[in-house]
Image (cartoon, rainbow, N blue to C red; front, side, top):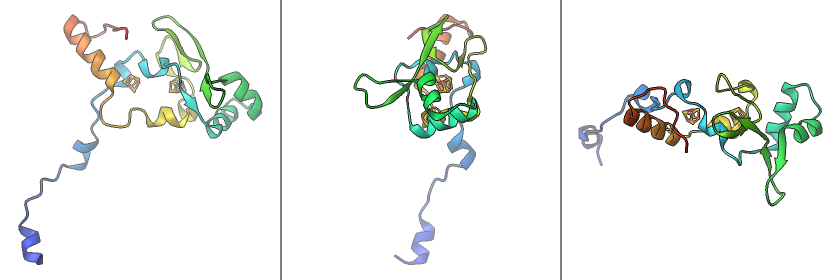
Length: 139
Ligand code: SF4
Ligand code: SF4
């Protein structure tokens, strides 16, 4: 194919900011993702969290994590949550925010991976149905 032919192909280019514009707001969400039971974290995550609190690695692992059902992975411990019954140990009940944001595990940094959050779509739908922008839908 010649350069001339290539130049004639119409390509719809989506501007960068539009591609990255997210369709959810953690500010308006009660933090569904932090209530997920099996938040698996790595040894590197444990090291970062232990450092955050000035603890030895083993102590941090014991305090912040528990083994999964097969005993092969480490999951973030939970504590009671007034809305959902249970949430991550590091979740602020009142502000509905992470208390270790700068040191949070990799899996928390990656979630949600795209421009949408399934939980937020569900929340937005329920709020619209109820006509209440502060309504908290339970999963
Ligand atoms: S569930 Fe989605 S919108 Fe809510 S805090 Fe988590 S990532 Fe943000
Ligand atoms: S570490 Fe922070 S972001 Fe990750 S689940 Fe716990 S409260 Fe949520």
